[in-house]
Every structure is written in structure tokens, then in C-alpha cells.
Length: 193
Length: 212
Image (cartoon, rainbow over the protein chains, first blue to last red):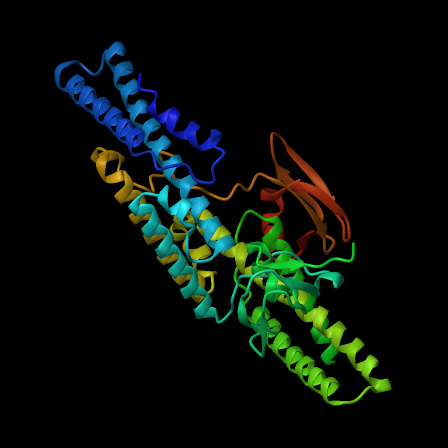
């Protein structure tokens, strides 16, 4: 029995990468296995009496084998889609190149289109859903940051003010405005420790 | 009167947020609540801005610290509301992405989404279907090419059999529930239960029971 389907899903579970390389090879093997089952199924139906218990169990075997392989493929693609969606929320609308290298063309298109869909929705409701991923606390409202690399001008306070983030300067800013830069490592959160 | 109204709006919104958080299902979109909350955020933000301007302009003043203190409290409120608002909308998007086929097939649920959410749902499903088709579905034999085959278990549905914590809002008397065998519970006001979500679903919709 072809084990490609199991391997495919195992790959996702056992990987230490965010997104391992799109395994076209294994996917093709699974598709071939499905094809093979279908051909055997057709052959049996043509030549044998489907009412006998041996024949009907053979038919069921192939039937379930096909559906199981389809399920493997679905799970594989679905999990990768979920990872891509998560990356969109965490990283923004450009995929880091190490990750897009590991994606199929279809997946890259999916990411791009999902990103557009999200942006469209946010424009429709006139609200940016990024930021505010955790409930704010009193100490979190404004934080002191030091600029590690030149960022330039950024909007703060809901696009009412502009602050120039030059390397080496420190600022006391709204957490929400600078969250992404801290994540990127461009800003350093100064705590009094 | 304004204050009481604001408190009701806020507590209703927090309840709506709690419902979304604790339930696997997606609730009807709270159009009025959301509009009011967003208006409130904008009004407060305007006052905050005005205050900050005023503080900047004035020289060191006794009243400064009072105004700053007040403004900080308002700022905190606005930030909390901003968080709740976005969290609410994001949780709903999450559920739409998890159960697109189920929602599409279920007219009542679909129509209870906001107009923008319905658009998102349509776009999302199209995207999902296209991706699956192009990646491998097309290469499978015809009978396997369906993406929304209920028989195969391909349609994800919210799992209503999880247990949730809830609070009873009014005296409901003795209610019968069906499980392995039927059992009765006397639901009194202010009682709390941890119970199978499916059982109290109808009560949540009529607001007789709240999730906590």
C-alpha cells in the first residue's frame, strides 16, 4: 500500500521549519496512488460480480483508500494555508523570502489574494484590525523605546502626529504604534531593570 | 441618562464579545452596538486630543496634572475599547475562515453576518476553492473533486458539544435536557453552570443565559 500520503502529513508534523518545502514529489505520488485505486476499481466493476462479498470488500477497500488519500492532500494543503494566513497577520503583506521559496506558485498566489481580501475587508469597515492583539494594561499604554536602526518618520496617535525615528534616539510612544518595529528588532523597548 | 446608556452599551458589547470568545458558533453581528462603540471611541479620542493640545499650550500649571490624569484615564478606556472592538471582529473572521462551507449553506447564519463579512466570506471561499482545485483537486478522479462533500465529512461545522461556563439571567424553572438519558435542572437566576453548549444554545440567543 502506498505510504506517500502518511509521509506527506508527517512532514508537516515533524518539521522544525515554519513551512517546509512544498513537496511536489510526494503530492504526485499520492495523486498517482488515487489514480491507481480508481483504475483498479473500474476494472473490478467491469469484470466481476459486485454482489459477492469478496468483490464488494475489494471495492470498499479501494473506495476508502482513494478517500483517505484525498484527505491527506486536503490536510496538507489546509495546514499550509493556515500557516500562510498566520504569517499574513504576523508579518504583513510580504512573505519573507525564505518562506516564499518553500511555497508553490499556487500558494504564493493564495497568500497574495488572501492579503488583498483582508485589506479589502478592512477598507470596507474603515478599521485597521492589526495591532491590539493583547489587552492593554496601564504600563503598556506608553513605552520608552530606543531606535536601533534608522526608520525615519512614522505616524503615531492614529496618524495625528509624526515622529522621526533616528538611530540612537529614544522616544516615549504609544505601544500600539511601535509594536511592529519592536518585533522586527528595529526598536528596543527600554525597561527600568 | 447618558451615563446609564453608556454603561448599558458597554456591558452589552462586553457580553457580545464574551459570547463570541466562548462559543464555537458565530453570533449575529451587533450592528447597533458596534456603531455606538465606534462613535464613542471617536468622541473620546477627540476630547483626548483637545486635552493634549491644551496641556501642550499651557505653561506648568496646577490644573495640568489633573487634566493629564483625566486624559490618561480616557486614553486607557479608548485603548481597551479599541482592543475589544478589534478582538471581536477578528474572532468572527476566524470563525468565517474555519467554517466557510457550513456558513454558506446555512442561510440563517449567513444573513446574520455583517454585509462586509458576507463579502469577505464569499471572497474567502472562492479563494479557498480555487487554491484546492489548482493544487490537486483537478487531478483527482471526478467523483472526488467536490470540496463541500458533506458525506465525506469535508464540511467543518462548529462543534457544539463543548462545555461552556454560563450564568443564568432569569428564573427559568425546571428545564429538561436530553443527553444519554434526560435530566432536569432547575435554572434559577444568578446560578452558574458548566454545561454542554448545545443544551443552553437556545437560551443564549434569547439572552436568558449568558456565557461567562
